[in-house]
Length: 366
Image 1 (cartoon, rainbow, N blue to C red):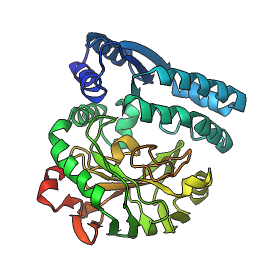
Image 2 (image 1 turned 180 degrees about the vertical axis):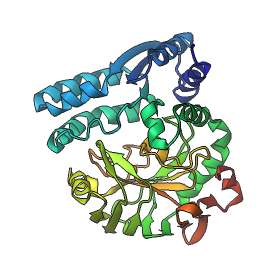
Image 3 (image 1 turned 135 degrees about the vertical axis):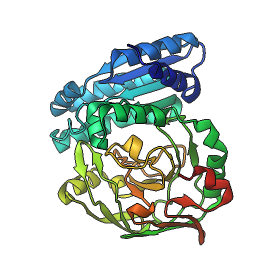
Image 4 (image 1 turned 90 degrees about the vertical axis):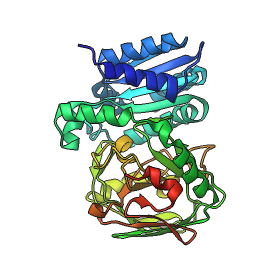
């Protein structure tokens, strides 16, 4: 039996997130999801006059291809994908994952090659299309979250179908505050971090690009970051699981990086010079997401969290000029049960223990 929540989600993605118009070419990128998802999206795009174009991806085959990656091969793949992306008006990606560590054994040099070659395609998508990306609930994801499959599906649709538009006034207020903020000071267990936002504009994300959503992001002045941060949310990057990540900064650069797998994390940060600088600072506040599950699209929106992202800045928006093949949203949760913490803007306490203190921002609290 067809789940009507799939159609509700398709309507949100097509009519609200990407605002598909008549004649728009819509790239629907599907990764290990049921055919019913693609069918629903195609029908919704057609209903508003768009032109759907579907690509089907398989994680097992993608892994096999990456293991045997060559310069010539990925030059051609990237060239063709970039040409298609330049013709695309809207991009909708739905990404399932039967095994989040499927790419864990791809050799580091092959992963580096693939990431570098495909980065221009992602930059084109981010900068020049109306796009939205989301996960698809699987038994594997339910296991990550410590939930039954049914409970996780209910959670997924509750989170993804949140009334994001209702949060926009408070999100706009937070954006305006970040726009005029010069100095940020963040403290918490194992964290004492200072950096500047001077001259950089923030972006409010209310269901337009990532689902689930609920963040406002900017970027620090590249060489302004000083101090130490201890991330308390487990994470996964390039198929490798990391815990207890701790970074130390001097003049913006990561000068020390430790984790449960210190060797692997430093290989990632040595991918290119920009990987050791921060490309994004964001405050997350999706009240429906409380616990980490090693899935960045969910974890970076956790209620009472912020993320501080080594690597690539978003070109043209909240752009501090940092360039890298890496973009890793590492998350710190500041709710009391995670040890608490404070965020100060220009010396004023803005958020304590994960809750905003200013009246205009309180609608964003959990």
